[in-house]
Length: 442
Image (spheres, rainbow, N blue to C red):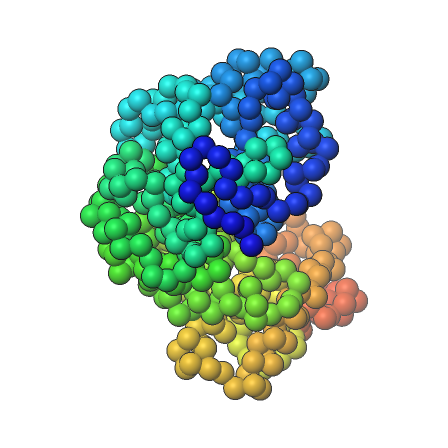
């Protein structure tokens, strides 16, 4: 248990021992930066997550040394360094396939709601005051001693997400902080949410229209990956925030169940938390509206195509996953749709069914599991006949070759992709012979 004291520039606790702190790459970077006596601290997410004993993904560092000096110290130690954000004092060091962002202590000079003009400082608290939330203003020195200028430790362990300073002021400085509030509440908060923060988010929600689609997409993706994304989106809806970023999202019951399936309900290969699948779960609009959404949020073409492919109107009714599908029908659906798309459609349809009825019978659940396990085990099968086989029967090169192959593929799919090459060639020979005998057009 961390002892929480008021930070007056003195350590208030100690980071738990974790491998990332003693990793050789971390040790080399810290040694390089402190080689001539400059102070360096771990900052932000790595400190926050280490205190909660969560996995640490990114290691960010801060120092009062200017970026040019940081670059020189790293290169002096034989480390690769690049100026990845000199406008904001950030240098990135690369060691053993790991990267470390090192930022010079800063203070804001001006902010316009999207970007800030900064000046360097040697005041750790002044730099921490730039952070959005108290739990992100924590820092720790190389020994693991924790510094906490804004009572972030208390907030962290009580599940409170609070802005550093006045919420309206902090959001006005950077409107993205409004969405970050809901993201961090989803990952670190416990009810009730901070009333002052919610009031500021509600009042400033119209300002979200000024954000670039890429920034909104990134935050919404992280919100959707939270343990209870439906709960976060419902909170956003209640505060009149969701209507400014995702008005198409209303199916919170289906989203909640899809997230539960991914996180805890199922143990099937390939089924893990997926932001695109979760986005598909909450959407209540058709293909055309999804394409508009994809353009607004700057989704990749692949992501937009995947979302459109999970709208039931884009799937032939006889290919949609349903409990009790006959094996040949299941194999055909898997071959035509692909295992991933079929799996996602099955998850979405099962979740929709349970959201509508409150529960599903054990027998029905077993049927859905059978479909998902079939998708996990499925390997695409190569169509065993090609254009050369059609030409060998005297069909002239041209569009008719494709028509014969399409007819034969349909027959193959109707058998659940089980018919072998010899069987298919027999069908083809029969059809071509019949055409020649009767004059039937191909």
